[in-house]
Image 1 (cartoon, one colour):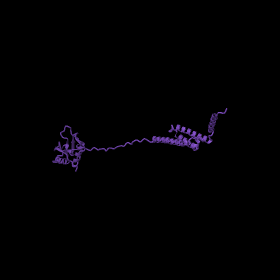
Image 2 (cartoon, one colour):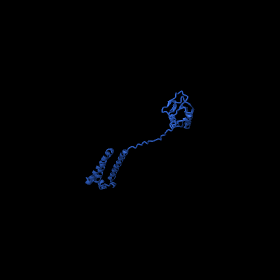
Image 3 (tube, one colour):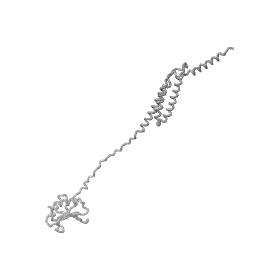
Image 4 (cartoon, one colour):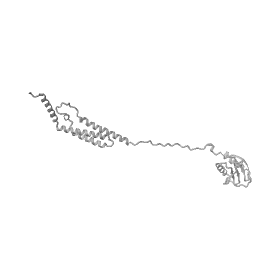
Length: 244
């Protein structure tokens, strides 16, 4: 009985497949190991970049290791397809993988340093500006000015010399005072000129009156008080003594 040719054919196909499996070269095996190493480093880089704010230095070291591993691999098309397998030539996966990894690391590193620089910028607070407002110095109103004629003076002759009261009246009127009356004092024994005022007469008026009379007469140093019931606000008793 002739042998079954279909069985022989199937055996030959199996043997050809086995030959193809054993046709891998040591160089292809070594390249595959490098590819697996790169994939392992890429996975490690992804784990690190999840905590990039804490391990940025380690991420840089892993990138350097990836570059060093990539330099050991020669990205040849025939390393990734068996000879005669019929697979069409195409770009090497390493050519796409390595730049993508480096670009990812650079992008994550840039984000980290950007966030670090933003957080280190000190907060700017506005400086308060003090405004100095001009101060207004109050000036005396016209009503506050001393009016000499407001306090009439009763001039009396205390020296017994005729015309003394009239002379004193002329002196005071020229200085701005108002003289309400002239006459004789209760006696002619006055040597110094005496000034008597009520309590409601301001001190500025008394000072002005004293300085005016002192130009001619000797004025006593002590100012005497008039009772509040007195009809006169100011009384001047002219004495015989003169300052000139």
